[in-house]
Image: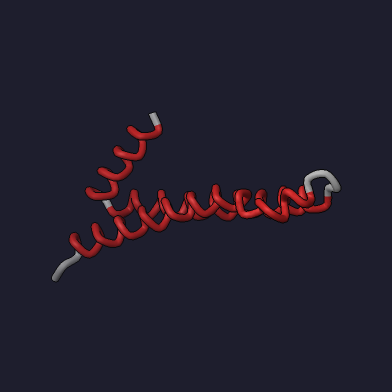
Length: 90
């Protein structure tokens, strides 16, 4: 289902650059929210006596989700920009 949603949004972004701009903006806000959550969880895990050493070694795992969401936002932003340039060529 998520694959179909991605395909539909990709096709809509190719037709209407506004859709891609909205999707990119929403994904950036979600990315910032996920980053805030990841920093909070990393701080809690680092303060724990049991999870502290593990968080120090593998703390980067907390930040993978925000980075992936930001990558999708950049992807849709670039596609939206390409559609905008194609539609507004003089």
